[in-house]
Length: 639
Ligand SMILES: *[C@@H]1O[C@H](CO)[C@@H](O)[C@H](O)[C@H]1NC(C)=O
Ligand SMILES: *[C@@H]1O[C@H](CO)[C@@H](O)[C@H](O)[C@H]1NC(C)=O
Ligand SMILES: *[C@@H]1O[C@H](CO)[C@@H](O)[C@H](O)[C@H]1NC(C)=O
Ligand SMILES: *[C@@H]1O[C@H](CO)[C@@H](O)[C@H](O)[C@H]1NC(C)=O
Ligand SMILES: *[C@@H]1O[C@H](CO)[C@@H](O)[C@H](O)[C@H]1NC(C)=O
Ligand SMILES: *[C@@H]1O[C@H](CO)[C@@H](O)[C@H](O)[C@H]1NC(C)=O
Ligand SMILES: *[C@@H]1O[C@H](CO)[C@@H](O)[C@H](O)[C@H]1NC(C)=O
Ligand SMILES: *[C@@H]1O[C@H](CO)[C@@H](O)[C@H](O)[C@H]1NC(C)=O
Ligand SMILES: *[C@@H]1O[C@H](CO)[C@@H](O)[C@H](O)[C@H]1NC(C)=O
Ligand SMILES: *[C@@H]1O[C@H](CO)[C@@H](O)[C@H](O)[C@H]1NC(C)=O
Image (cartoon, rainbow, N blue to C red; front, side, top):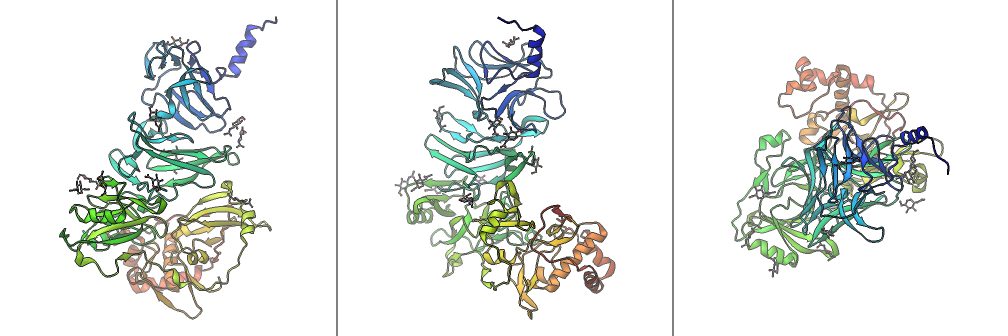
């Protein structure tokens, strides 16, 4: 038998620190400097130091990925301060992380086992088990102790049998994995819903599970890349997801106040955010206060529910709706009735009760017969609708959708109820005019975007996902794919790639893109209006756009014309030449906004004519809905 020189053996161990395979046994502990690698090569477990600190933690990260991305940490709150750490299986069969001085930094506390082994699986789960391949008992697993990351196959939720509550908590900072201020947690009672908490304050709410999806998060759903399961029975309630194509590396992470879904791309050697919540201002918890309703497409975004008025009209006029609304007429308990809101995210269900056997009619009766009941709804919309949910306190955190969402019946005094009780969102989509746009076949777009490949995803707008594409002639294009849950009508969509006069209505710095040659292109025609050749102005009840850029007659009276865009452009020019942002309405002192300042300097009449002068000089910006992709830069962001 050949004997290897000792020095060569030594060299081998230096070259491959991960000689331990994927398993730790009582006889083969894992010391700092060595790692476990899962059988398929997906994940690695070992000691690491986050950031520039010397502190040592035991953690799991992706093996295949060049940027070290830690998905789990054992000793989050108790770092080792030197390299003498070792992970052993103790005599009573638990995992134990200690240093040279035998100080214990972390351990598991499972029931006694005689000959357990710990194994890093290809899913990223680190398990402690006893037995052989075919029949073993699971003693402990890292998937039951999530940190800030949810890998495919992990569960988030509550096990009533064991009391195990699985939730995500942020790291304190990028070099400190100890639990930070934010957590993402399921409230499993009544109608289950997820919350992002900042310590003990609610920051975001998914809306209750309605049998098909979370009432306020229609996009936290299955699509062609991910499938999810929401499991609900008397013993447990949890959320879990799978990646359809196992070659896609993806994770779900709580990052400060946001839940983000990342996908890894080898081509860009980086993580891309595929999806993220909260998405808009209305996703922030209780943005419009009790009995307020938030519509991200309205400006301002807050309104009161039908039959209610702002508690503090002054705050509301300044754009702050958080004080909420109060009833126009007090309830008298006896002769009350209900108004039906459609397409809404149901209010916070913390103080609600669910009865699974009640019909909607019985639900209404039971609400009417209880003076503290403020609203009712169907709690399970699947299969035509069943089960009853009743709210026993103020209605908080309601959001308006055009599509999706569900019906909510709100209790009102009889005198508030008009003959037509249904309240629908305003619909402006009946103004369509036939457009002469260049039209592309879907097949052309499919080819240009590689069938809406995830690798071509550029970002996400309010109304859908934007993909990078290339036409046959090499022209780079950006393609917006209207989301099924979009709040945008088909007409608004058509306005975006015309020979009619277009009023953009939302000209601002962040809507102007620069191409490779620094040519400005106006983008985001989502709220634009088409005028016939001889039309001069129009009136709208729904003022959209960005405060601070809107002309006074538009912001106050809803009158808009070509000159509205000229006004906005003037603000933009002022921003460019002054190098300062215009602030908008959130400043109570008008002198703090750029416009207010200019107005003071030169007087009202004069500055309007200056706008027109400047506009005629600068107005050579090409009007084009097609954004050139490469070098997609923004001129700057206002707001
Ligand atoms: C990681 O790399 C291994 C070996 O190269 C490969 O078999 C495996 O499929 C890769 N995993 C992922 C998720 O790309
Ligand atoms: C863990 O294993 C290492 C290496 O064999 C050993 O030096 C250390 O004493 C063990 N620690 C405990 C707590 O058993
Ligand atoms: C809940 O915990 C028990 C006990 O560990 C386990 O048997 C059961 O499978 C768990 N339920 C779910 C849904 O995970
Ligand atoms: C958190 O989110 C921000 C903004 O989306 C991103 O820039 C940052 O890299 C994220 N942090 C981590 C640790 O992924
Ligand atoms: C990404 O690149 C790594 C290293 O080059 C390779 O092991 C891995 O299989 C690649 N993954 C995919 C999905 O192409
Ligand atoms: C639920 O009721 C408690 C006690 O009355 C109250 O403090 C809390 O604000 C209520 N929560 C909601 C969401 O209405
Ligand atoms: C649910 O409603 C049914 C029908 O009204 C009633 O018989 C039952 O007691 C209710 N269940 C609970 C838990 O209140
Ligand atoms: C909702 O209703 C459907 C069909 O009636 C049923 O299969 C499902 O279990 C219900 N979901 C819940 C959470 O009760
Ligand atoms: C009335 O509703 C409240 C809130 O849902 C509940 O706590 C209370 O028990 C109900 N009262 C009766 C008599 O059902
Ligand atoms: C594009 O993808 C969809 C689903 O993601 C698939 O159904 C369709 O067949 C694909 N089309 C082409 C032309 O590959």
